[in-house]
Image (cartoon, rainbow over all chains, first blue to last red; front, top):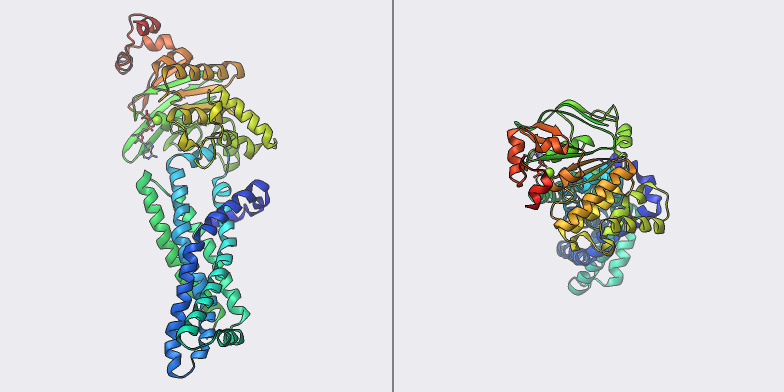
Length: 236
Length: 254
Ligand SMILES: Nc1ncnc2c1ncn2[C@@H]1O[C@H](COP(=O)(O)OP(=O)(O)OP(=O)(O)O)[C@@H](O)[C@H]1O
Ligand SMILES: [Mg+2]
């Protein structure tokens, strides 16, 4: 399905398709901002607290700037964002397409010679591939700020020290690898969700099953692919 | 125009269609009746290959649709309009957008013109006021009629109607009957109508086929259908107070 959807990328440039994509981006992105903010903030705070407590034993707590930033950029930013989007947007996509299958709407599209992959999958795929890196960037920023807050309030690391430290050791590569991950995760979520949606059988029960499977399969794939991408770019 | 050759379709162990064999002629209004679960919707779905036969084949204009490649399938499907039993309107579009969808996707017409045509078609089914309403806010019968407008908007050669009048009041039902008959006669469209409504079957049908036990048990013009000696057909007619004694008009009048 991913391959087929990609053959329709060219049609994404059409006016009507662009409208669909923007609408999907709004659904995927803006509506998730609230949850993402909270999760990102606390992820950064937890990271700072955990590493800070350890580093303080050696008097190295000033390094939490690097620790939090690098872990957020490479791993936790893309990972946490993907989990939230899989659970909220992925499941919604599966439920939506599943319902369409069950109520014969997808069959109706086929009879009208409207390719369901182009019509339904392509806008969702493109929008998630654009939205995921943007949201991940947002998660990264909020997470790093969360770390700075914990540093300043509980570990006696000033904001300036925190950010200087982060700038000194975090690399652009960390950011790019994380963003690459997020694009891949976006593709995973859209593909899994659409595939599960289209495979729905047996009415409302089937829709529930498609939703559940989407979340589980996305989570597992994100976890494994996340590891593999890290492994690819950071050899020991 | 459409030919079923010994079509058998099983779901699990049950043969829903069991060697169905008949032909629908160009330009006629062909009615399919049968009890609930007899396989009427399954029969329609075979005509556009939403289902494929386990045995036998389905021909459209002499071409086998059951094993056509995707290009050919699309070309053949373009001949059809399909009113689904459930309506199958896209929930996130208004009735007007739904009706105009086939044109928006397949013609280069500007949006204003498409909306104008969609409005005309909605008017034909008596729904002009529903143009901006979403399917969730329409009644069952209104959804059905909007779906009907969508099925006919591209003026296809063949239109499949799955229970077009179910859930409609008698007066609206007759309007829809007339619409089907008019589309058929004026534009030379071939119409296949699945219905439980014997009144419409007998008034608009050129021929009526009854599905029972996976087979076509009777296939005749309205007069012949009423006069059928088949037990299943007799039972079916009697259940709707139509007996062989008078013409169906007299019997419904009494
Ligand atoms: N996709 C499917 N999978 C499994 N069984 C199916 C499927 N579609 C139809 N059936 C079965 O085939 C039989 C005929 O179904 P069909 O929908 O054609 O009935 P029908 O004649 O249209 O009835 P109604 O008048 O109630 O609409 C039913 O027993 C149904 O359970
Ligand atoms: Mg049916």
